[in-house]
Image (cartoon, rainbow, N blue to C red; front, side, top):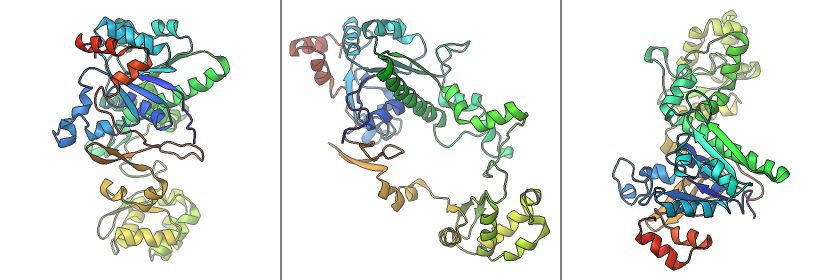
Length: 397
């Protein structure tokens, strides 16, 4: 089946995570993503653990967001490399980069230059603070954006202070936003025939994901604090609980669910307790209710309670580690974790987070070695074997 972005060519200058995550989402959906790297490849290829994959320049975190792409190496400090970029951009649909604003302009391949060559070009720039504003030139990293956006202020336990989320959330949110921005611009181009700049600021992206908390403050003045593991609704039945062998999260949010939960726990008597007559009362007496529920849950294992509560239609899930999660039959049934052969063995990678009935996202090309497709890509741009050999001899590739 034809994928959504089949026939779309992306010239990808992105590095590290936010930008590569964005171009990876489009590559999964059929775009021909040409990853432009410095000779030897980007630093993320080599990681910091010195395992066998990293020594090959195929660090697992790098592979996670760079499958399905072709690798072209160019030394962008060389005039002939800049000439090659311009030639490639003339036939590209999208250019993506996540340098600080002004870096691509300084190289001579910024938006204004490239759109003069190709008016239909969509140019996506991902940066910490965007292409405008007083902080546009400030370098930004995931931790900085988590801190500035307010994300850390609502995460974790008060006693421990502000807490980062357990993955590079600002990078990934920004990458998803960039992919959506590029997809939107491509769709708009189908009506207008015009390319455009897609300006993605990491700070903006994270704020958009925090729409509920931000809007509630702007509308009502309420300031969200750290909720530990409690649901943002503050309902005590949306919280983390101990079991006999671990932890389970309850997500009991409605009255019917509450009335199914307590009998399933063997505490139907709590339904007649005036302290728990309604949600305001339950929130007011949350410590008492929490203790009643946890005392019951401590009698059995997380797995047993997950089974019993599922039968009772009282939403709950055991807290799993990643080694357990990747073994779930549910994930296997939806093919989110996909296998791809490399010269060094099979690797499993996460694919698209959604399915399409026709031509959805799949991992089809192994993560490339640095420069693996240089000759192929340049030949497609009209360079002869002699041209390519000369460029290699001059250190351009």
